[in-house]
Image (cartoon, rainbow, N blue to C red; front, side, top):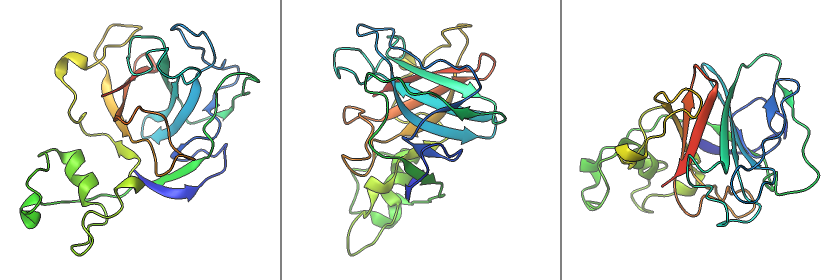
Length: 212
């Protein structure tokens, strides 16, 4: 997923920031950890089986365990694409990112054997694709900050004991996306300098989020 400039705040496109789109009557999610305030909306991710909506607590970063899938300080929802509408934003709390960033997808192939001078690269598909984005031999790895994550595949670097189960049915969740913080302080999601992971349970239309 590559940064592609700005987008309308209520557009039904791949984006970080803006306002969430949800079925009529959807209440803004609140933190279930220590602060109890409204969560911040991170990303709208249309996928082939619906639209994923990611929320993370940012009212007092570090006080609520927003990096933990079971803390109650984050939420992932799966909505049908039909009938989505902008959700009313609470008047108080840290609810929206400073900017709305459009995302386009781009398939990247990267062969580490072609760049043997970078032997420290981990042999991981996402890392290799991210590192290979806009590769320029004269300039090094180029525009990695433009990479906002990836869709599908497998969760890079995450140990099996951190793979979340569904909070509703206790079944196995499916990996949906990686999220990167963003290209600038003005557009960035606060992931604590880590990689974000989005999981979904299609049966329950809910998911899980964590960082690592």
